[in-house]
Picture 1 (cartoon, rainbow, N blue to C red):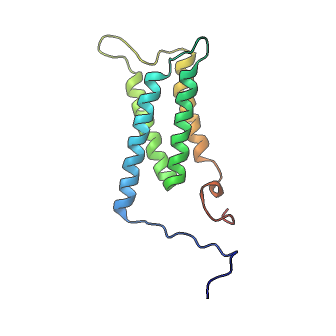
Picture 2: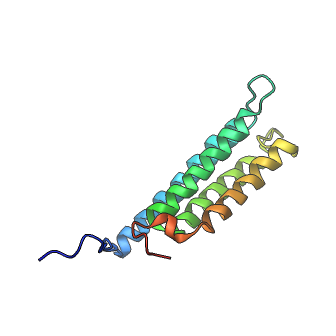
Picture 3: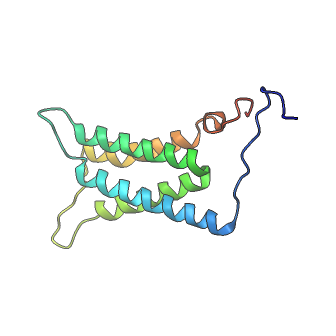
Amino acid sequence: MSPPPHHVQRAPRAGSPLLVVWRLLLGLLLGAVVGLIGTVGHRMLWGDLPVGPVLGLALTLSAAVLCRAWSGVGTLLACGAGWLVTVQVLAAEGPGGDVLVPADAIGYVWTYGGLVLFAVAAFLPRRWFVDDPDAG
């Protein structure tokens, strides 16, 4: 006999250490790629509209929510670490004195805005990321 239709069974969590490490590494790589793309394109303008920071921050929030939904806060933190390290390395002064992220309003919006978006994704309600509607 099958359970009543209102009964929702949770999918078993695959908690093997190899799978956890694999997800953390993929989250780290995703964060690094998003940080690279956003840092290179955050200065882009379309006329007078700053589409670079908007698209970069939208991509950052999408990656953060994806990692949170995919595997939880651990993968989100790995993605945030990959993003942060990549953005900070690319924001440093290069060998010729060039910088990709100058210390101006758009540069600050990109660096600090991305960190805020990772924090927002970390503090979203857990029930948004589970299949069980009764989960809190």
